[in-house]
Length: 238
Image 1 (cartoon, rainbow, N blue to C red):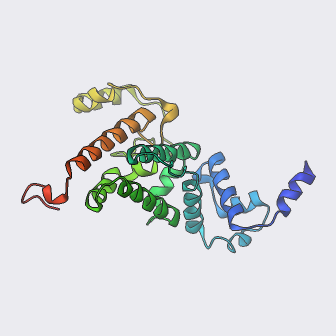
Image 2 (cartoon, rainbow, N blue to C red):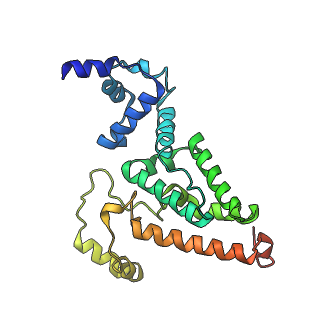
Image 3 (spheres, rainbow, N blue to C red):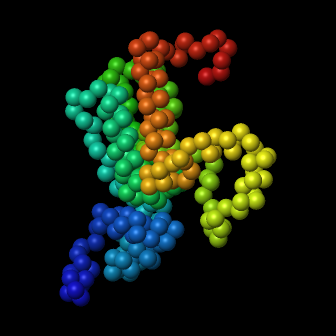
């Protein structure tokens, strides 16, 4: 075993190996535990060696996002636009389930990374190849939002903060239900599959597919109607 470990440490250091190791480390320990020093230890190098391949922590995170996006399946040849889009979006979601830290990091980036831009460009191509106009596709991309990358942005982050008690206080829950009865009613109206949740909140597989299919059905109807943005009611803001 020591000889095997030494062989791993002697493997040439390159950007791909740095990113692959960073992704695996984040999977194992969480994104908050990832640091350049911890990554260097994992690779068996001094921290300064990393900076030949990633300029800083931000560039490392960008590269990790691109590595995850690179796991998304390519479009299925011969599939209709709706099926092709649906399959790729669900493939993106499977990638995020393998890397639970990824949605948070994607949201934290100041702009889309090269791989994200390439993926979004390919999704536009699927809509356009399906006959949707550039006008409709513009609005489709906005409506899909983060769902294109396999997760839904919740209204707010419901996850407990650092040091918070994971077990909710029953009295506090009752007080919230009394103050906001309608929210309490719908909160208890559905059961979620915790094993398929991506990120924080209620974004489980069923919830995600429900919204995805609802959107795709709507886009298909608009496409068949020949909808354009000029069809919006007069006086409505753009």
